[in-house]
Image (cartoon, rainbow, N blue to C red; front, side, top):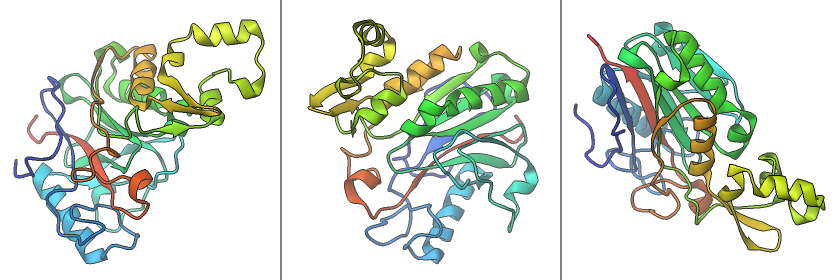
Length: 270
């Protein structure tokens, strides 16, 4: 496969399935979108974005189908027609397919991309998981959709967490802690409520940093959600987009920036 050696690839054992996440490397966009920006409709040159998307499609041998991501939980089932020129863009934060020739694609610049592979390449899926989507259940919804498409159980799936904001860089307020069932000082929890929260696995995902602020571990939250949904085989989640400016786009770090993509597809002839 002709692709930048800098791009990330799952270390899973998934015959008949291809998957990767792009980095900043390999494209033609000028700063501050340098160079592999895949986000259409922004301030980057449309011609550069189109060329970058063509590079990605050639590298994977399939047509990436991008979504209009809204930090929700909707999952869309993709078909070959979704990869055709002029096809409607789905408003969703996850996609699933059982068809070759197209790739489920998620755009990223700090939120987590999570890719899924069913046994023997019977189905694949991709989810956009920021904190709102995680708290709302986007990963659970995607697991259910992939399992339905592949007629398998969650335990049969493999999942991979790509690059996103890391646990030392994601400062959040009480609203995020509470979205995951947390009890904060500002909410005046009872002793029993605070004790119940402290005993939950999610409590380890939030480290107090200063009054009213916590450091949130988004990859660990995703991993916990996947395990609770029955997916035992979960890899990745070790890269921080904010900390590595030379390799990754980061909206939180830069404000005006590009977007990477995590894609998964069923190999032709698989």
